[in-house]
Amino acid sequence: MKKQFLVFVIRWILNSFGLWVAVRIFGTGYDATVLDTGVGVYLLAGLIFSIMNSVIRPIIIILSLPAILITLGLFTVIVNGLMVYWSLLISPGLHMTFWNSVLTGLVLSLINYIVSGVLELRAQEGKA
Image (cartoon, rainbow, N blue to C red; front, side, top):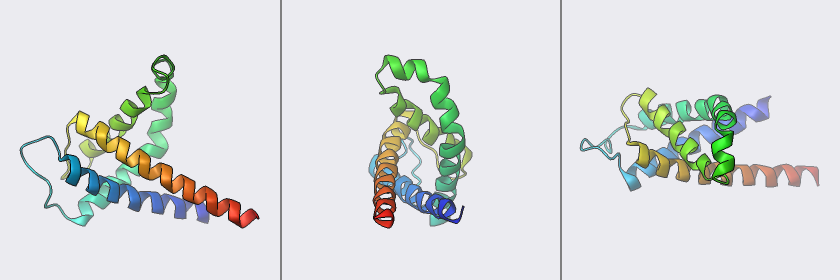
């Protein structure tokens, strides 16, 4: 349980960092910029995204399984963008258009993939 909490905290911090990077690279898609927002806004948005990613995303994946199968998995990019879009709608201070959220979802997916790979390598080293 302690290890799972540590993994969640690591993902939360890295998702917050990924949101910050994505807003810097892609912008928000709106005229009003949020580039001057503080660290707390990104940490809160990262926490909301991490919770939604671990609780709501599996349900959405199951519900959209026909679309995922028809598009040979490419619809998961839209699902990831939807999770980012909904997370930013809930979090105060950050707003992003849907298509910028899809691009942000790609960045966050890459970050989560790297974290999963590193954690898996560490688990294999611990068993050896």
